[in-house]
Every structure is written in C-alpha cells, then in structure tokens.
Length: 295
Image 1 (cartoon, rainbow, N blue to C red):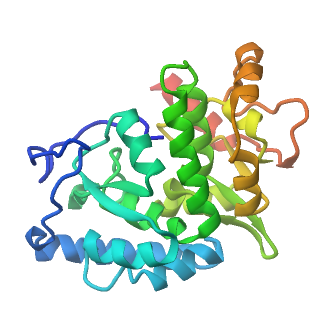
Image 2: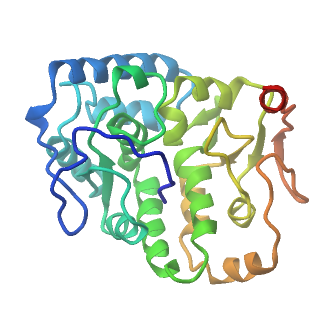
C-alpha cells in the first residue's frame, strides 16, 4: 500500500490520466541528462547492494536488464517481466488512490511513477520516483512467490476497503514490500524497495547497531507503527518468500478481529513473544531526538 509523501512538480504533473490513473510514459521524451542520471543512480546502488541484497534481487536486475538504455521503457520491461510471472509495470504520474492501487496489484499490474528525481534530489527524494519504483520494486516481481504475495495483497486490500483496517494493511506493506529483510544462508539480506533504492539505508538496515531486527510475525507487524521521516527503528525478517506467502495468503478476518482489541506498538518497541535477532541500541535515533530538542 502506498504511503503519503510530499508532492513535487515534475514532467508528468499535468499529463492526461486514464480512468485507472495510468499515463503515457512517452519514453522518447526523457532527456540525455535524465538517462545519465538513471545510469549513475543504478551504478551506485548496484555497487552498494553487492553482498547486501538477496540473490533473487541481484539475479532479477540482470535478467530484466534494468541498465540497458537509461530510464527503462515500461513496455519493454513489462514484456520481460510478463514472461517470468505474468506481471506488468504501468506508468502513473503520482501516488494513486488506494482502491486504484489495490485494483492494479490484484490484476498483476504494478503502478510505477514515471518521473525521475532532479539532480538536486539525487541522494534523497520523498516522493517515489521511477528509480525507487522500478529499481526498488520491480526485481522482486520477477520472483514467483513474492509476485503471488503482491497479488494477494491487492486482493486483500480491495476487500479491506471500508473496513477500517487499511492502516493495519499499510503496515504490512511498509515492513515487507518497502523495508523487509530476509534471512539467508549467508546472513541477513535486503529485499524491501525502500532499502534497495537507498544507499544509506542499505548499510544502516544491516550493519548499524541502532535498529531492532525481529523475526516476522503477521499480527505483530500489523500492530506496529512506522516512521516515514527517517530510517526504521525496527526491521522485520522473513525466513523465505514462500513463508511470507504462506502466512499472508489467507483471509485476514481473524487477524483483524485480534487487532481490534490489541494496542498499537511503537516503532522501537519490543513486544512480548518477539523472536528478536538483534536488540537495537537506538543510539542513532536518540542522537536525532537530542538534536531536535536542542535546535
């Protein structure tokens, strides 16, 4: 599920939208400077992810050829992705309404922002752009189990509309699709798009002592608030993509019944029953708080 971000003006701000909020990517209109910027973002992040991203990510980046011609052409990219898992990538101008987002996912379409960040935003941008959405999200859609999880998430979101549980569902998306870690034979690795597209958080999520790292539990994750303004105070770790699918490919009614009576948990909070892989020192977050208080 998408999250709110500051909206900036960009090349697609006034683009005509179809009924499903998709637009014409107009790939030919990207400038040489934009293609060069994509290539530099790609090259930097590929170097950072070596030994940090899971093998499925690194393999899919090569299979999908995300660096062949600068900013990817969504039509050509979708042809490759569709042969692997049946998914397509559709261009949108900005974040789309929840019902539209869920409808796209339920029908194996990933809505990706088509605009590319400016040079001034090279290191950080609040609003998801084409680099975050394509480099971060699309490689995992080449994995059959994760692709099935994403489709099930879209179907679950459509059912949850109007139930008052969307905030719980958003937490599941945040702590898996955006900021998830996976345990492998070689140690913890990254699969969440919000980490994959950020050189700083790629290092922080795995190597810093500050955050908690807790084994994934569905109801626990859906109780947990998250931060949108900084690194995460807790990262949740799955055993495998099949395990994630198995836990989430079901009716959530019983989970929602539990959540109605369960209190929310704060981002850094350790809960009873947690399988904690690393107790965070929270030194980074405490230092940030101190700077804010003394500013």
